[in-house]
Length: 462
Image (cartoon, rainbow, N blue to C red; front, side):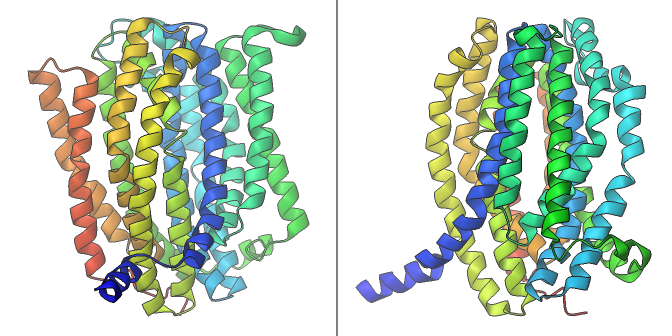
């Protein structure tokens, strides 16, 4: 009986050495994401001191800019699938071609970014506050902030590409150190420029934007400097003269589905935010923004799980250890459940931060923020498991699974959302809970896809 129980445990959970390896990859990524979320929280905390309207303006700008970051992340993930497997196969040429794909594709997006942030910011931002009773006031603040964010597009692209490439080969400490530095720079200039401390001009919302520009520039310079000194295997700019267009085609074939699935996901998230924002005034926008700023400190676990799963399984597949990768899939999914339960408990505790961090917000905004945090805490185990499932699929290039998961969910979620908006008077918190419970369907679809084992592929064997 005891032997059978031990065999069951060994089937679903790896040994401590396996999880130590996963934690060595995942924890620095979690910490790096935590610091990035901390920057967002510090921004929100400092801007919140200016009132609900100004915080709402910065928030809706952030929601639009988030679309760009998700698209950039999709491009890097597409190239990263191949970069990780080429790393496992010790194929430098392949790694460099995958890195070149990231560069070429990401830089092709910069024109669209400039148009949204610097040419048509108000028109784009207005889509986020349809029906809001204080829309014009919020847009005035958002437009001011959005224009200045146009000056961080280039820095964000370069930093993201280098940082993601280091993570994909399992080197995660340096991106963490650079993120710490950028966080400190951002915090210092936020404190100085928003409120006019240390003799700096009091620029309020503009000050938050200038602080971000300075921090992102410092981050980019540090990443470039380190890459020049370290000379990682994936960097060789001479590769741009001999691009492997056949490989680019393969990456685009896999990556286009990732980009499509992520765009469907971000579309559903953006539409949701716009609908929620229309259920009241600035208290709704700022209250929900406050909850997301705090919850992002906890949801960093998702990036750690995703990166650790992608690196471990991707390298096993690239090294042609297919059976080992199958075992690691089960071990990582089981570990994700445990992490999700721990994060759920931590999330409940974060409600105590609301009246401390966002004391300047109205009582209604604080109440909305606390309620949202409770709802998101309950959903945390669900999200950790889904992210681990999709990381396994992506590690083997089964990007169709991601498209099915996000596509089906979006096609169901958006009509449900509009029906609730039209025929109910439910609060945005209740609406959020209803649409997020649809994520159970994602688990079912991803489970069916994983059982087919289309992800068990060595992409480096070309």
